[in-house]
Image (tube, rainbow, N blue to C red; front, side, top):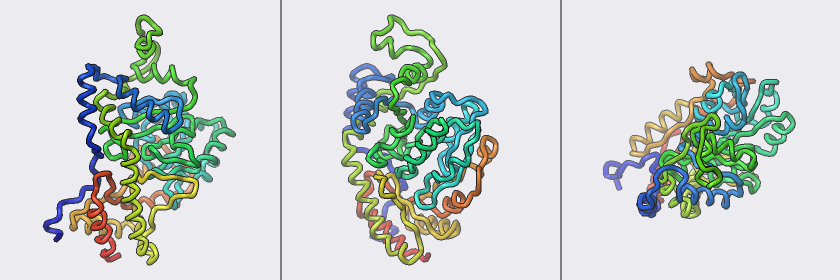
Amino acid sequence: MSDEMRPRIPFNKPAFVGTELQYIKDAVDRGMLCGDGEYTKKCSSWMQKHFDVSQVFLTTSCTHALEMAAYLSDIKPGDEVIMPSFTFVSTADAFVLWGAKIVFVDIRPDTMNIDENLIEDAITPRTKAIVPVHYAGVGCEMDTIMEIARRHGLKVVEDAAQGVNAFYKGRALGTIGDFGCYSFHETKNYTMGEGGALVFQDDAYQERAEILREKGTDRSKFFRGQVDKYRWIDYGSSYLPSEMNAAYLYAQLEKSEEINRKRRKIYDFYHENLKPLEEKGYIKRPFVPEEAEHNAHMYYLKVKDLETRTRLISYLREHKIYSAFHYIPLHSSPAGQKFGRFHGEDRYTTKESERLLRLPMFYNLSMEDVEYITDTILAFDF
């Protein structure tokens, strides 16, 4: 097929497995479309079972899950929170909301995750939490991070937005720290359009999390019949997704292995067939440490420099392939400079972020298109 005749290949298309509309109709027929209905419970139970986690709170976004985690971690004005600068703004926003100062540290160039060996030097008497971000669904070095946190009495909030159904030494990402935050945005492996989840193991946080999520009321107790009326108890907000969103997500969770297999097939095809470019020194392919089991959330290349990346993005678009770069490091942004500071040397964060290019990766992407994308990249003049 000529390029002129070939349909445009988008960077992303939300997953659709075929039962979503049936489940949404069922949610409508049940007559309860606000939060915490049958499909919210089904999604929560699925995650509890598959990720071996005690508490699951479905939320309207991963941003809101992070906000809840920050609140439950008792973040106060003046506290410091350590995280990578190479992340989405929500990672920082959730803590800035409660008055925290963000302390950015450099990343590892192999995984693009926070460099665990730089965390301890960034700790001060004001440090309250560490926020590892599992980039591309590849786990950070959590044993080291948890050991540092224990020695210094710090909370660990895992930003596992990209890490749903990925693992570190057999443990689900998001379930290792004090709190884990998932995303079910339309760009993620499993989606509800906009949505997320807060997960944690310590049941002592359950009641506070329920009150926080239910506008500051004990409405959850009321629905369980534990109180005869619900009251305003504490600070809260509205973090509950609708049943229609949860119904869409549950259809995808039921087919999680099918979705995962297809995404791994795409990832493995890219990885194997682009290997010659790495052997020639033109690109770097993603690296997955032995202890990590990734979820094929994304496939990225790292090219020589920003100029090469810009040319490659333009070249691919000329061939109707839509690729994308990723985050502009937060510490170089106006808000990052206002609400945070970079500790130590920026050896890799900026340099590596300018080299990175993400390829189309979604469940309904055809293998014919994957082959075309790969062949087009192989023909590029690096």
